Length: 86
Image (tube, rainbow, N blue to C red):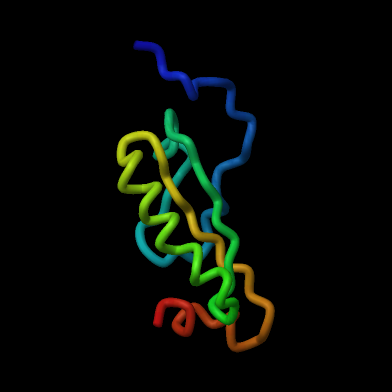
């Protein structure tokens, strides 16, 4: 069966100095997957309310879907990686 998500990727890979919480990814790791980018900040209650929905989608599509959370800091304390991880 052909991969229904196959196509030409012209996006650059992630910067080598990008900070990751969890496992670093490359575009090669994501090949053939549907990628959902979730932009969030830990001071945003609405961002926290969506987490169960994202988890349910991951459970429903474990082989096809990858959810990547992109933390978009608004305040200085939110820019500290250790604070985000906590």
